[in-house]
Image (cartoon, rainbow, N blue to C red; front, side):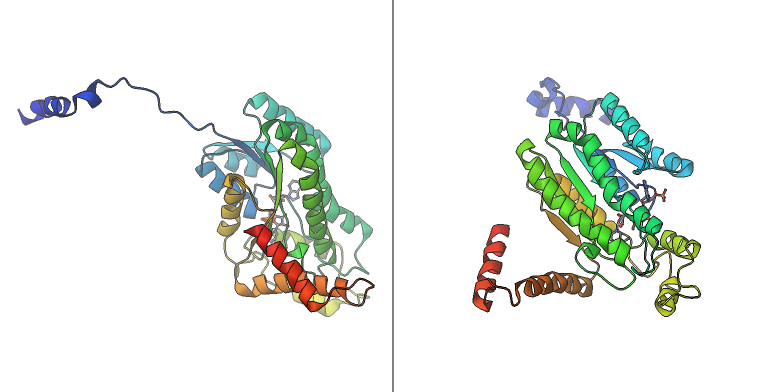
Amino acid sequence: MKLRTAPLLAALAFPLLAQAPTEPTPQKPQRAVLVTGASTGIGRKTTEVLAQNGFFVYATARKDDDLKALAALPNVQALRLDVTKQDQIDAAVKTVQEGGRGLFALINNAGVAVLAPLIEVSERDLAFQMDANVYGPYRMTKAFAPLLIESKGRVLTTGSISGIVTWPMGGPYTMSKHAVEAFTDTLAAELQPFGVQVSVVEPGNYRSEIMANMKERLVQGGYGGAGSRYQKQLDRLLTQPMHREQYREPDDVAAAYLSALEDATPKRRYMVVPDQREAELTIRAAIARVVQLNAEQAFAYDRDALVKLLDEELRKQQ
Ligand SMILES: NC(=O)c1ccc[n+]([C@@H]2O[C@H](COP(=O)([O-])OP(=O)(O)OC[C@H]3O[C@@H](n4cnc5c(N)ncnc54)[C@H](OP(=O)(O)O)[C@@H]3O)[C@@H](O)[C@H]2O)c1
């Protein structure tokens, strides 16, 4: 008896609600994002976070097993893509066009690390470094520009604090990440008239496979062997935990990507570091460069003028 009266009472108590025509709730259109290098590390984590937060992700990878794993995620379409292969890039553009969702953002994340002394690194390995980390974002951005301009979308690239700091043995990698800084700023100015916003996400050290891949290349290239002037430094590099177990998962980096996509006015730079030490060494390196640039040149600023310039830049952020 109780069971039968309950729906009737509800209908009497809320007659308007009960009779209201059922209007469909407006759905926010699911915006599409393409992530390169989504098999592991930062790319994989970013794919998961974006797909869980209302985005449709074209997650790209190179190996069959990785493509299979990505395809199993909800709101994800896996695409085969090597950023050094123009035919695969062209095929990805076609797939995205045919997908009919447009493209709101391109995330240039794929990257490799070549760590070797600059006076010993082979030209082949330096080219390999630049091909993935610099020419990769350039090729991808050029190919997807029409779709991004159409959506007034965003281009985001995984830079690094190595775009600001440098260290011995890190020459090839830091050169590539410094190039990403210039790529970002120039592209931002060039795409601004078309309503496309450009940012760089600059992580510090997080867990990923990048060092394991780097080590393989270092060993294959014969670096640090007989005749090297840098045996000690290279030995030290090779004995580091290669899967970076000492570092945190890149959740904060993925969160920065989510902000960069959701912020109405995205920041140009999203530095994401795991601790104060990495923040300090990066900011200090940027300041040191300003001080060195200013020193003893014909139009040098004095201390007060430098502080005034700093204050003006700080005000622009408010
Ligand atoms: N982890 C950190 O601490 C850190 C810090 C600062 C910046 N970053 C940057 O973060 C990005 C992602 O690296 P990660 O640390 O997450 O390392 P990771 O786990 O090694 O991931 C690198 C990704 O890039 C892909 N990749 C490499 N070369 C490629 C190519 N030619 N075409 C397409 N994909 C390619 C890899 O694919 P495969 O699996 O097929 O090799 C993998 O999916 C890189 O740009 C890296 O420089 C990382």
